[in-house]
Length: 415
Image (cartoon, rainbow, N blue to C red; front, side, top):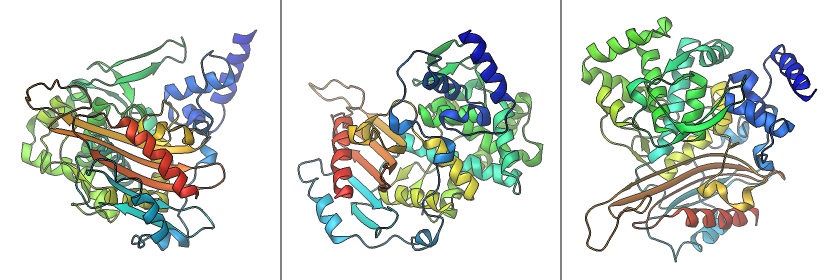
């Protein structure tokens, strides 16, 4: 009887027009992990449900600064003296490498900014994937300037094989079969095929490097082929094989960096310079290296909330894709945020050099050890703020420090 009811429910929802997500977004996007989460919430799959803050519907997610308050943020305000003092007081005992930008945008309250070394440049790591998703939506807007529905349909129906671009990759991705309900988490294979929507979700929800390179590749193909996109795998392979590498680099870097410049983020504040997998870098060489600042990332979030990343519909969709319905880590994992909606991206990059008596470990590099977090936090009582945190603490996994800082920053904003 239970299976029959589930089948009837699925048939009814399939017949419905586009309905909400993130968790209830399978019907709009075709992202299969969202259907599984919905079935968990419904009790059809016996598993621990996502925390309260991760259970928002698409109808609950909105941009916060599309009004005159957003217009006032054409440039960032001066730091609020009281908030700045409180923020500065929590860092004296931490490594000098920390950089922070935090902006409270709670409705009905004055907007308050506090910063610490906001213009210091860091390797963004996986936070750079936000530039890739922005680049993808910019190319979609070029293809269908008058119809966001057509952009969504392309994302949902265009099936893409990973190929060499997705390897090597250490992050596992969630794979759920709606028919059999088989679920697994595994590393990507060259033969994997997902819709463009699912590739984008893999890139952001679990930070798959392979997915990021695939999404970047497709954005380049959109720029190159225009209205003829999507193209066959054979045509795409021939394009990357025969186009001069210098031309590929020019297009590839423009695709992900042009939208940042259009949003008022300078090259020194944030630029992306190479793809995320070694095989992809061979096929499309990068240029100039990657760098980012917390000020640049704060500007990104402000532009997002203002609806200025590509356009309003694209900004809202990017925000939905950033919504954390899966396991929260690092900054977003702080217990004080469990009831809050968190739109999040984390990134890390570590490297080691030979040193007597030192054994290289993951996230404990002695040469470089970047750990970065970008978050939009929305509490149930309306308290809302944007925060970018970056660090380069050598020989130490800074995850616990980021977790602790999240609690302290949250208390300061509330106070």
